[in-house]
Image (cartoon, rainbow, N blue to C red; front, side, top):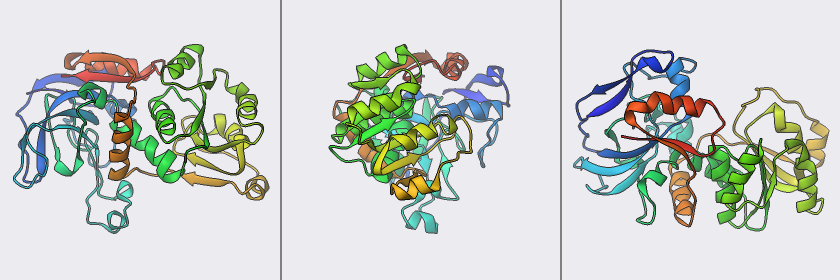
Length: 340
């Protein structure tokens, strides 16, 4: 099979297109013929050597967000040959205390398809059958490759941790990113109202494509927009993954008893805020942590209910380096996909 192999750490020149043996599935595995693979920032960070997750070994095949068709299945696999699936890249051990507590996202033995084991930048990939989620017939497989990491992460943060409910209001900063686009659509499908901030008019236009009515293209204008939309009450939930750049605005936007869910530190790792303001207003500060398989399954069902996959670009396997460079520009809206 053809695969894009990372042979070292650095620029796109450490990638080479190679002919590898088709992997053999174990008794509880599936062999998936890849229809499309969504790129993630972690692919590039590991290629550059900025991040090296425990277990990463070279040569390595990246690619975390995979959708395709089951070509072969082990004797113990409940997923049949011919099934259309997307793969959950996070594979907990299932045996440690954290897994037994339902916290598989924090499993110390966690394997990540495309990050610690070979992934989907190839014609075929092997994965545990437990990681394979059936894709509804109404969902295109290429669109499905846009889902796994962003949609499961967003569902876990907004619904599982943030407890967003119908009739509530969610504020999402940098909402034109992959997680942000997933979060706003998930909120819509649970019956919540969405306020979004973005960094440019072009990104604001992308939000209108997925039905977001209240968008601030200037982050400095978010306070006025929140006051207008909520009649001065404040939002119920804020999804915060930028850190210092938006933290103060996020705290100020919350209603009495509001919930701030945080899961990133894009603009820095340290923030400050008034303890008395937080406890007097009864605010909840909730670290999202890692998603679990039930989040992935629920997110997939919500996407099947009219979700929109925004694609910034689709590239052949041979142009993986070009695709990764496009991802690094951070000017795109939607996922960058590789189609083997």
